[in-house]
Image (cartoon, rainbow, N blue to C red):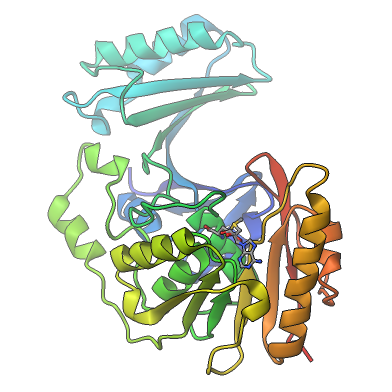
Length: 365
Ligand SMILES: C[S@@+](CC[C@H](N)C(=O)[O-])C[C@H]1O[C@@H](n2cnc3c(N)ncnc32)[C@H](O)[C@@H]1O
């Protein structure tokens, strides 16, 4: 099994941005719905898990066969070389989904696949951390292994979170959509647990997002710990301390400082307690303001949010000349309340049951 399809999952709406990131890592991505496909071997699977900041998980496509009925599925699954990839001492969880296929009974299909695995001396458990995903679509049965395990936004550093934390993966994709390339200063004036600021500082410092966490692929046959340790040994680059977060909430600032410390970017970041109206630009060349203000409030509270977005727009317009601003919100009316001039809209994405979008400005006049 030299080269196979590697599917990089992301929320719908972010495919093009994730494809850009995969291209920057040297791949030739093909865009699909809810992710992008690249081609590679197991070292590429490790690399994608280690380096991609925007992927939610990395699936390795193991192979596929046609199955027109359940007995055929049973027969072909028994011949499928699962034991080349899975270990007999580590159980696997089996997930099955059927779409537009003659085999439509997911429970029955799962039973046959479990039987095939057991026949090869492999054990199955619904509690296993390793997942074998079976997709039966148009009578084609495709097996993939989820090589990430815990979703990739869990970098292992943000242990303290605020009320509505942004996922690291989404923060990284929004930073990319802002044109952040690791060289600009970044300010988040409502930083919560510090996600944008820490993510930006890690990018500047060349710290791979997966450097400190475990992955499901470590439990596959053929995993080579020495080679993996060599791959993930970070080679940090020198970066300027130009990453600033503020929030009016004391707890948020304490959490951000602790999270930045765990991520190893404390020397690059500054977190200060301040309300948006007291925000002042740092002494750096103009860079990027990226902010995820509160939104999605119940009727009645929306009025307060209009005032908050208005105050933010006023502060940024008056004090952040030359900076580019990115606001993430679910509410176009609130974005408009800032009074800022936005560039053409990007596709919205699903987050926490809401459709959120990035509203970007050019350099403020
Ligand atoms: C949606 S959360 C931001 C979450 C953050 N992006 C993260 O990943 O944790 C909004 C933040 O805005 C802060 N906030 C609300 N009103 C503010 C104000 N007037 N000035 C400064 N911060 C404010 C809240 O304390 C909260 O932490």
